[in-house]
Figure 1: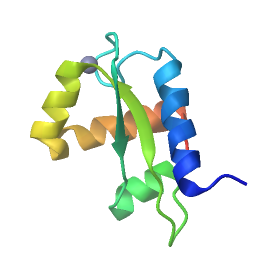
Figure 2 (figure 1 turned 90 degrees about the vertical axis):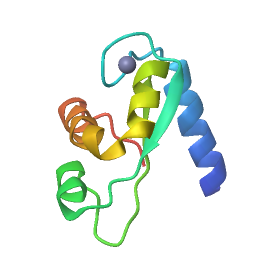
Figure 3 (figure 1 turned 180 degrees about the vertical axis):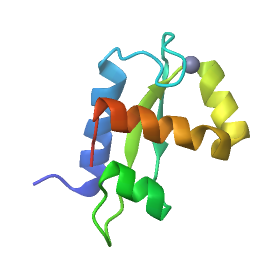
Length: 91
Ligand SMILES: [Zn+2]
């Protein structure tokens, strides 16, 4: 049984090692970012059970990471859509 911390670390390493392209622009990614769906719409779209928190890890390039950090709300719909489309869910 993994602790939460071990589980999160393993997930980050899996995402980082997957060689997946940037979730937002499709370019080469170099950063693992974390999105926590915290609105009813996002939670429903991503199938997060009531009362549970879910961390969605995804890979992005440095440019998109900076853009998301500067204005997270602008990119949240795209992030949710990308996860919904690929069903690349992690818990
Ligand atoms: Zn990008």
